[in-house]
Length: 134
Image (tube, rainbow, N blue to C red; front, side, top):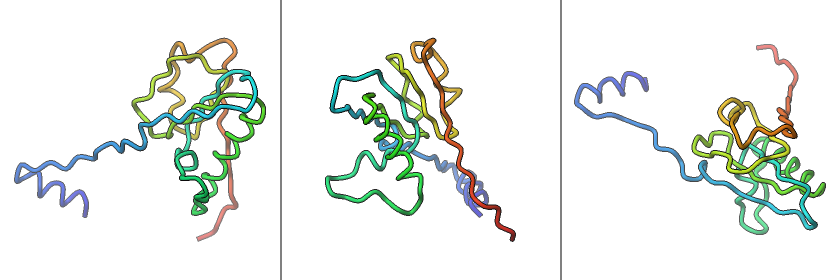
């Protein structure tokens, strides 16, 4: 149906394009309470890091809690956290990171200097649920 509508509108010279969400193009930086050990880049979800004070983390999917907990763990270990949305296509690293944690997307795109250093560790959390028969 979507394709048919696009073709019909194209016939009249109207093109539908998807605009990038400015929310997805943001970078959020979190600092530990003590001197930093280095910086970690988390490419996953931004929502848990842009909430108003007292606003709960969304519970519509576990990924919101998962990425918030990953960030909290690295902050507790003394690392600065740079967080981007996994669909952010405009972010380009300008500093070295000791660890990159990604959620399926951005691994190849961010594989460039100064991001790549001998110390860099890349992590891809793998989550598997039970297989459901249909």
